[in-house]
Length: 172
Image (cartoon, rainbow, N blue to C red; front, side, top):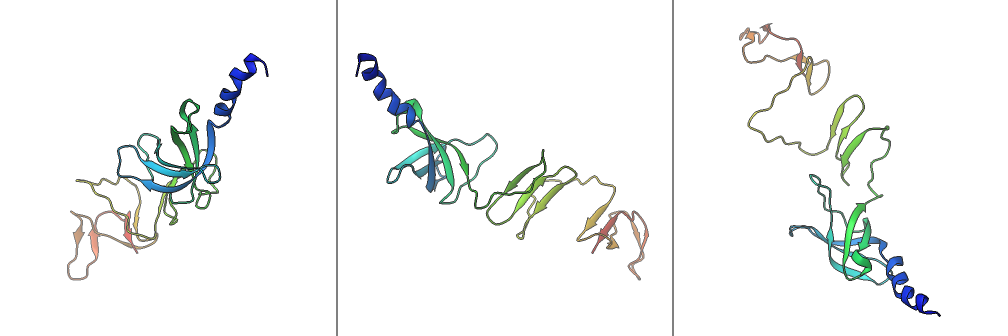
């Protein structure tokens, strides 16, 4: 082995181990930067690894999720996680250009090509001082329901019939 090879050999190992696949084992979401415990090579576990997330988006991955870990400067003692994927729950079937947020329970917010969909078997909560819905047609519950009186509409209190107002707000 010549002098150059002796110099390059230690660097070669560091470069080869700079980027690795990992399995998320534990998550600590209480710190300013989320930290994870990951399993890299068989038997190689790293604790307290910082997980970088995109600004404005955050999640707590489930144990068993897959990650891409980077050894900063080629040092396995200074790992960071830059991406986490969980193919067990990945939403499929989107059209080109569509975007979605989803979880392991089947809940979803999808920016489809022709609408925005919110899907949940659980309660959907909106907390705001004021909610404004601007629409030509509002269906509460399902399409084809009965008309709903709005503030200011005339209603016959004896029959409950809406005398004047919009026929665009309906309830199932």
